[in-house]
Each structure stands twice: as C-alpha cells, then as structure tokens.
Length: 504
Image (spheres, rainbow, N blue to C red):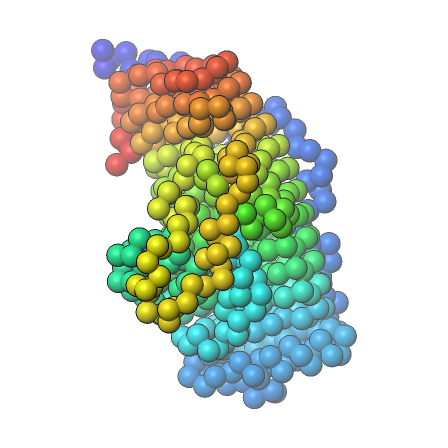
C-alpha cells in the first residue's frame, strides 16, 4: 500500500498545479488566482502623512538616552511643540529612552530611527487612565505606551524599537488570575481587572500610519486600532511577546484599515478583527469593515488571521491574501460565543500558506467558555483583595444579558477561502455551528492540505468545496454531521513523503 502513496500524491500535485494552487514550500502561485478583489480594496489605509517642515529633537527638550532617566516629559514636550507649530517631526539621537505614556498629536511624525529604543517604564502610574475599549468592553484603562488619541494625520515610523518592557504586566496578570480570581470562579474577569499596558493604540483617529518598527514585550495587546478609519500598519516586526494576551495587530470596530508586510511572533492572535463583546458591543454596534490584510508572516501565535471572539458589532468586507503561517497554533480562525451575537460576512481569504499550523481552519460559536461567560459571584464578601469589597462597574456591564438570548448567537456567512497550501497540520477542519444556527455559505476552492487528521464539520449549511484535497496518513474523509448541502473534500492517503510531518 505504501508504494501507491507517492503516485497518488504526484497526481494530486499535478491537478493542483493545473487548478492554480501552489504546493508545499512554494513561494508564489503557479497562475493568478481566479477570484478577483473587490474595488474597495484600493481605498484602505492612511490617505496622507504629516508634511514635515521642521524637526524637533527630543534631546533639545531634555530627553536623555541612557535608559535610566525618565524621558516622558521631555519627549511629550517635543511632540507638543511640533503640534503647536502646525506639525513636524520628532526625532531622537541613538540610545535608549525610558518613558511612560506618550500622546502623538495631529500632523506629527514620531520618528524612531534604527538605533533608537523607546523603553516602557515598569510603573502603572506612568500610564494615566483614559476611556477606551478593552476586549470588547468600553471602560477606563491605563493608557498605552504610545497613543494616538482622537487625532488625525499622524505617522510613527523609522526602523527603531518600541519596547513595552511588559514582564511586570505579565507577572501581575498571572498572580491575580491564579491566586485571586480562578479560585473564586472569576476567570472571566481577570483579563479586565489586571489592567495591563498595551504597546500602541490608535483611538478615534484618522489617517494614521504605523510603519517599519520593531515592537517587543507588550504588556497586553501590541497594536490596537479602535474606532478609527484609514489606518496603515506596514512592515512592523513583533517579537519577544511571551506574555499572556500579547496579540499582534487588533483591528477593533474600525474601517478602511490596511495591514501589510508585518512579521509577527507572539502569544495570542497574530492579526485579529474585533467589534465588541456581548451587551456592550451590541449597544455600541460599530462594525469592523473594509479591511485588507496582505503579505504578512505569522510565526508563533493564536491565528494567522482571527475573526472574533468579539463579534457583537459585526465584521464584514474583509480581504486577506498572500499571508503565511509558520508554526502558528491556528490558521484562519472564526470564533464567537453564545452571548456575543453579530454577523461575520463578506470575507475573502486567498493565497495562504501554512506550514506546521496544527489547526488550519477553525470555526466555533462557543469559544473558551471559562473566559466568555461572565457570572457575578453570589457571595460578594469574598471578592479578590484588589477590589476592596466593591464590584467594578464593568462587571455589571459584562453581566448585562443580551435580550432576547437568540441575539447572542453570532452568524457566520458568505465566507470564501481560495488557494491555500497546508503542510504538517494536526487536524485540517475544525468547524462547529449550533443546532438551529448553522455556519452557512462557506466556499473553499483550490486547497491542498496535508495533515494527521482530516477533521470534522458540524452544524453547517451550504458549504461548497471545489478542488479541495485533504491528504492524511490514513486517508480518512472529513466527518460531516448535522449538516445540510455540504460538499465533502476529496480525501487521499499519504505519508511523510508527501510533506506531512505528522503535525508534531
């Protein structure tokens, strides 16, 4: 039987080449993908950048590059002076600048050149609290290290490093969660109450460019684009994000956003689309829409491109193409929970390569229950000590039910995934809707997948598979249950000689 394996694989590879798919290890497609891009993709990203006529050096305002002397006030003074002059560039001499929260203003280019590091102060008092949204809930929260807060026409770039110095946030979170929250059944609240510092946040801003930077050690999310329009994140490298919830780039209820040429290695979702959580997300009801994600490399992390779990305000009109994952835990990831609601629709994912990504395609409406479902404690006399006996306001918000309950169940529909090559997977398909709430109108075309298990599709409707082939050591078919009008992919038997590493 093993003698037949290479012949079968050769036939499959030849058919895929003819169909326009690319093969494991290939860098480009053999032919142009059949599916075109929508016209709106040309109208995403920042439309303009600051017109720089004058430079303001941080040193001239007293900033010292010794990595020890706090430089927050001096750098902020340089930013403020550039803004007061109608715009300008803030520059740094080589060195390490210890700083707390900085607020970049309209028409200012914060130029962090190669050889310059902005190093976060490990002190929560250095990050003043401001209204924001965190993990789908509007609340007060510490400022980020770098903030673009209700501004326009801003650029942050230069080839240098912004280092969140975030281990103190990671340690704070784990101590709170393990010692004070999980023993009280409050796992769901720990992410909100730990108040970790994000690295770079754009909030209610327009025409912002974040480009050619090295970002590392974020205390929480690395880049969050929230309630913004026309934002570009280009050529950003993210490293050393070993802490919890250190997402790469989060696009949160924003529109006309471009994420391209980023290289992300972190400990959670690499690139993620969000639109609010549960009752609060439905109250705001601001969609995440018209987003292009292209030419990015995801290494370690939770998903090359993730949708949710904050889906309450809808996620729609998304195009992701020419992205690659190497060792990412999941590939194209759709997730929500039974209290989120919202719709994910009009999604096009194409030209994707995945190497040693255990779960290439995942869909769930019941993601991470211990985190997703908030329950107020019956005994309020035993609250975590950091709360000083008071239930926080955001706990009440998070426990406000979505009414009627049916509005809490998200809908995934009109999703197209075209031209993907997958090697070294553990389970190719992991998809589960709910009884009465199927995942519907999902199309796969030109997929070559090699893994240990074919996987399963449950509670789905109207799934079309054209030239989709799943090769496993046993050659088993994808298990399809509780579904209607779902086309099964072609299954074939193959082993390591086909490029399968067993998902190890």
